[in-house]
Image (cartoon, rainbow, N blue to C red; front, side, top):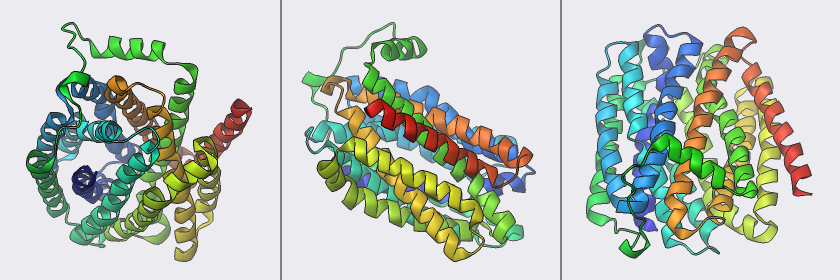
Length: 386
């Protein structure tokens, strides 16, 4: 567990470095809010298209090769981002990063391989804490390297650092990671494999409870992605913040996420059950999203972000664990790859819609609409449970 934790953490530090940078990088090349959110959605669009393929391959060749290949591709994507001369190259760099994002689904499948069904939630929480810690160090480093002056932001150096962290993660994968999927448990190759058709076939075979979990995952992540994609533009207009300040607020959110996913999710799931944890997470998401537009001071903003982060940090690993417990060992990579694919589809749709809401309805409305969506899902979930 420690090795995969370290690899995911290092990889997510690099990813986290880029997060507060992208909105300002896009605006630097003249992007409107809709194009900024489209830029952030580009990564997820290509991850959506390729995640099932990575999951399919990992069930047949193992998790380690997928981790290594995808990390090497990520290095190239970050280098292209650092050298981008215009907005089009930013989109190209993010597309390549999305294509080579197979390390995420491979890491979740790896954890599923090495944990028992009873400890699955704890294992997923550990991966989640690596995400959280990566989002502590990454945005803080990215913000520090880029600086807080909106008119004199350094966009290149943070991207080079992100490439360096991806290279470090690939080295750890090569020399310290042991394969988690024994050859006897690997599936056979199907020479006529067609990704889109296979996705449709898998979806048709899913039982209703699994489909319901995937629906919940889609709505939760689309709303949170909408928040992520518009937050920097919102703080720029409300507080005149640049990359540095946004990097620190994302790091603050990462601290909360790491604590919750690393120490609280597992015990809470064992005490109350995964469904209760999921419902509680949705409730806090609603409260935090509604409070955010009224956060006109730093203190109120910190409180609102803490509530939103608490809600999402409960919901995300609990949904993943619930899904993992309902599929066979041989299908873990494929189904979790499908789950990640649905999650990244949500990260495409959420930002795209929020960008237009931001422009045509006002900067506060992406948060209000997100709260309404999650509240609707929560009410439906309570009825469904009965």
